[in-house]
Image (cartoon, rainbow, N blue to C red):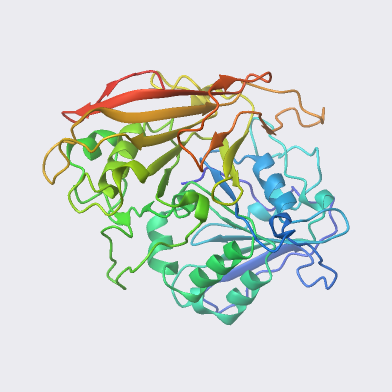
Length: 423
């Protein structure tokens, strides 16, 4: 669940823009800032500058949003001053708080943030509208108006919430089909928290609620470990495939709120369950990758298979995001098994004899803001991870203090993690 709590009132008073809510009686709600009907929108995804379109994906780890991740999506959409562009937020519950956060001026402070983080500045970057659709059921996911908004989007972002809602309300609908078409066309997509979880080929669907690391490690087949599309079906329909297919995220499962909720153990479980080394696994265990992302941290993934990489955008250092187990704030973790688990069956703990490898991508603690009026300014760093080739990593610390470190070796036994304990 995302902790973004901005409200519409009092943020956008400097922008002379319209806002509109859905007509009463509809099963969805719709609102916007700017002009979604501007006929002069000419933005084209930069990944489609040639005949082949490559994905642009922003995976945000939850907590307070990372403004630089949205700015990256806007740029990848081909939006610049003068081009126009429509940025669409979709969610199953919640408000239109993203509209003023994104459709804003560069260098402005978000007055709803106690720490004074900056707004995205999308109006200055060329957006002509930011639109929010709350799509709370399967009927809304088939509504012609909703589908038309998605068809016209230049960038699409899935807000936080409960991924079980997204699974039950959106999976295998016309909305789902259009999101996949947008990805194929090079339109940038992103998500945070539950939205991020739905963007890998595999997803923790949370159909029976959340699961924490000790319970997942103690029995990787307990009822709370519901993985889409490995073993899940809802009471509304039977699942037949992944929510979306994004080439750089093939065989990938993503998890968020990684540091604050100690989720390394459950990610080990998810990766094991998908692999053929586990009872009922479907993929070669050496091909499955788990990605864990800390709060206030974003992975920005771009490039075609064979040349894709994950960059990092982060907020300034926030001591609230470090714990005794996770001492490196603003980090992302990449998990892979080098051998099949020695025990991965129902009713027994996951056992692995030090076959689990983990790389850690980390940012430096802070960087000066280009806007004195917005001192808490998010930024990108130099370190990156090669998502196309696990064995071709550049492990080093860069001049800006960011780093890629590892691989660290772990094992599991008795419902606990064995090995390196510093995350």
